Length: 141
Image 1 (tube, one colour):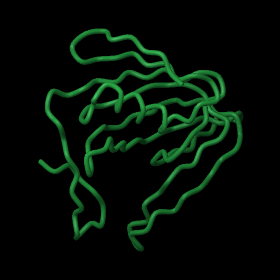
Image 2 (tube, rainbow, N blue to C red):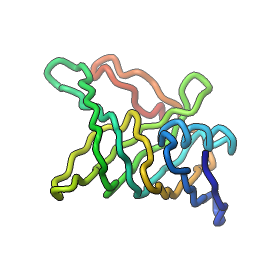
Image 3 (cartoon, rainbow, N blue to C red):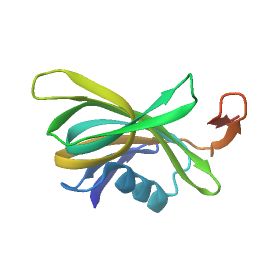
C-alpha cells in the first residue's frame, strides 16, 4: 500500500503504491504510526478522483468525480483525531492534459503513476468539534 522513511523530528517521506487510494493509504499510515495530529503535503498523479465543494449558501457538500489522467500539482492538508480515529482534511489541485487545473476537498483519488508525500507529526493530539454555526468540524483547541 505504501513505503516510507522516517527523516527525523516526527517527519516521514511516504510513497503510496500505484493504483492505491490516497486517503485510505494515508489514514492507514497515520494509524500504523499513531499520528493523530500533523500536516501533509505532496505531489503525484491520479486517474480518478472525487472532490468535494462546500456550498456556503446551502451548507451542503457537493461531490464530483473526475476520471482522467491528472497531475497532482499540490496536495495539502492536516491530520487530527475525531472519535478516537484519524481524521484527514485534505485539499488537492490537479492539472489536466489541457493544463487547466481543478481542485477542492479531496475525498478519494486513485494513484496512476506515483504519489509522494511528506507527513509531519505533531507532539500533541488535536481533536475536532462540530461548530454548530458553521455546520463543519474545526480544531478543538
